[in-house]
Amino acid sequence: MAQTSITLLRAALGVAFGSPLLAGADVPAIDTNTDVVAGLEVTDVATADDALVRVADEATSPMRLTLAHEASYKVEQPDSLVKNRSSARLEYSRYFLESFFLQLDAKGTVFWGADHRHDADGTDLVVSQAYVQTSFNQTSIKAGYQILPWGESLVAPITDVVSPRDNRELFNFNLDELRLGQPMVVVDQFSHFGQWSAFYIPRAEFSENPQPGTAYYFDPLRYRSEIGGKDDLSEFGASWRKTFEHGDVTLMAANLIANDYGVSMGDDGLVTREAERFSLAGAVFNYALKEIIFRGEVAWKSDQAFNDAALHIVKRDAVDAYLGAEYSPSSTLTVSLEGVNRHVSAFRREVVSATKDSQSLLLSVTKLLLHDDLTINFMNFYSMPNNGSLAMLLTTYDINDNMRLGFNVVYPYSQHADSALWSVRDQKQIVLKIQYQF
Image 1 (cartoon, rainbow, N blue to C red):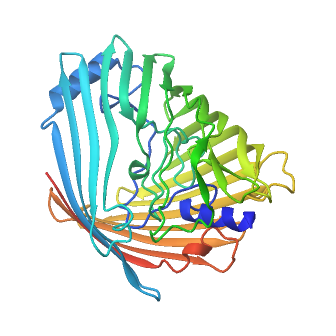
Image 2: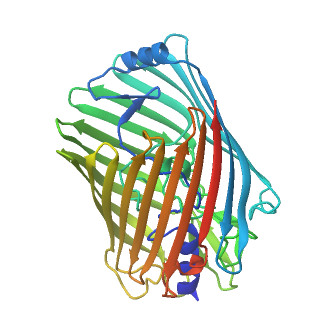
Image 3: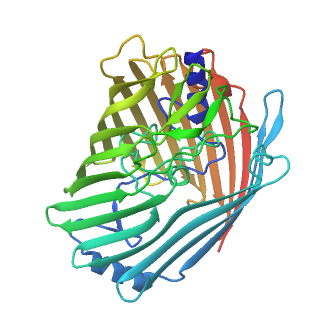
């Protein structure tokens, strides 16, 4: 029963060891892992003060509002309308008092009657960023509600495990939409020896998961209302990044609370959700060789929570590794291939919530047409063992500077009951989206 429960839960939260995927996403924004000071990308030799001044000089409008409506239709029987929702996203950035910068990013969504989240949620408000930043000399300090992106992989969270994620939908690789904000303080120190960065989170928040009554709620477990292990939810970590002529390398270490609760079943059959602490040590690199960009990540995660057959928590170390290559033969065509492997150390038969080794592959082809106004992106995701695949066609067309249309096709496929995609194998969907920005 525990094996089935964990398989279903992982299917709801994502493919391969926790990689969230959502239906109806825009073409994914590639995480470049570049440093940002007051919303501006900078090198490790730029000063934070200069970056803030450039933001003030170059800003045209402090506010941007994006209105959108999205509809998703499940074409496989029994067919149904899955999404029918409208949203408004407010982005506001302002430089003030000579050395301070304000950033706000919030999105409100209304789920109309036919939307699968109408009864469970009705409306939703997500504030991903609301922070104040200041700088002096070569030091930058950000405090408030914010996200912290680490790593490069779109396939799975290797080192990108600081910010929790929104898992309430399926089939999205857009990390900007998936990450959720939480209160934290981030200090960046820029120097000729690289960029040093440290963060502190006083009380970690957790990923949002599908609610009962929604299309992607597959969890058969019955939970207690209380949450265990919540006495100390502080998180902290640091990283060092050095940029070279053709690439960069980043080293990081952190003491974290897992974004997803661990689960432990009692003798009464009820399950307690547990906040589980683990440690991370990782490295990331990027290297450009002519038209090819190579990316890689590796992370050692100690004392991660897994489950045995009785749904009790057992701790194991895991090593996650990622390697990707992106080839751009022209300015309008990009082909990329990414691979991920997870290895659970000291694996024993009692661990049933994971296999000793698991792999994921992602092939992506992006083509720009019509003076770059039309973007066509084909993605195919493949997970092993218990083979499952997910093919997606994501297209966007910019009618003008303000209006964008999107059309997506999502096709999950699985023939194995233990595959992470088994529970959503019938969720073959077409998605339409219209967006207006001003």
